[in-house]
Image (cartoon, rainbow, N blue to C red):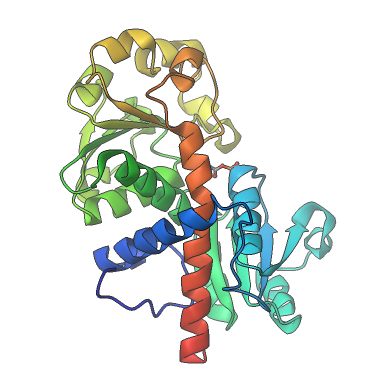
Length: 314
Ligand code: CP
């Protein structure tokens, strides 16, 4: 176990964590992964605690795996669907958070369409806030489970070559992966059509290319991002079929990449747009392993933030 103590009540983004703190989460997740394979998949680590999932955007993987993670730790879990909550009557995020705190919950897991919403919420409540994806900003637990999966497959993160291809401009997954992977010593390349590469991205210590063949040439892993049509990407890149031809991850393209290239995708996948169906389901794909690993990683995050809050009496 890394020689570092976790002392943060919140997990808001990988930008705000040190290399050692990221490694501690991954090592803690490693020990929780064993729990998820037992016949009785439960430990009492969060018994008596309450976790509230507060999702302002749709989610399948993140919401379900946070709920499972909390239940595996013996916490009580409440899911708030904002569509049927008092958010519909105009209640603000801060007021909702303060009311959840008044109800004596211990952790709020929040997904929000606005970048920075979890950071703001964490300043207004004393209970823990975990970012489950905010706008274009960060999706820290997705990047953590991506790194966990890479480490599981390759044995290390330092020195590996990871290509992130797709809608970099609108992607919180890309941003969190870049923060995490570069802090742990991976070489990161981002690849997209020019209109989907955000200005200044090279300042995040990544290689940038618009050439998919170049981006895949030396990669040990490729993380394929979804076109985020709900975020107005249509106007930036109108022809889905054109995107697939120029940037889609196809069997043909894999022939020119390393033969054991690892195929990743945060989901949900759009088959035939950013990834060919056969590639999504091929033996090199770890897409469903990523989903499975999300439970152990989120158990680690819930455990660490809860422990820090208890120890610091925040
Ligand atoms: N990867 C991810 O965040 O998926 P969901 O939107 O289904 O949670």
